[in-house]
Length: 113
Image (cartoon, rainbow, N blue to C red; front, side, top):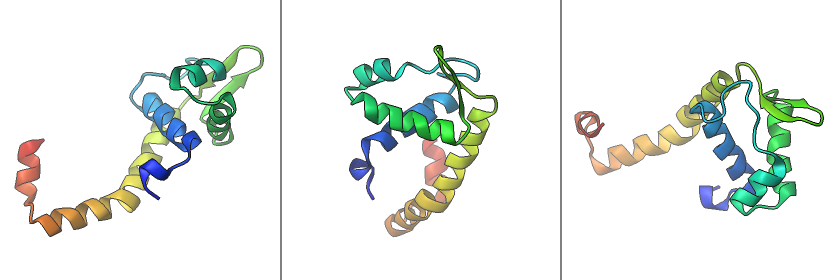
């Protein structure tokens, strides 16, 4: 499925995961409330709650009743490993095929980096 065709809750999940990985939401810090994130993203609060629920099920956030959701210890490393694996197994083969199709040399790619 293309990124454009992904469900909104998965797009929100990816956005939050990226923010945890890049340190926008460090371990131990509170995530925005469901309502605040929904308002900021123009999303339905139930959709945001579904994205947050997945983080909770995966043990990446800890819920403190009446206070909020907090990024769990080790969440950034776990997410980074999972995202890396998804890239290597899912995205990289398509990227590599396109590189080969276009006749791009590795040195060209490294020069652009």
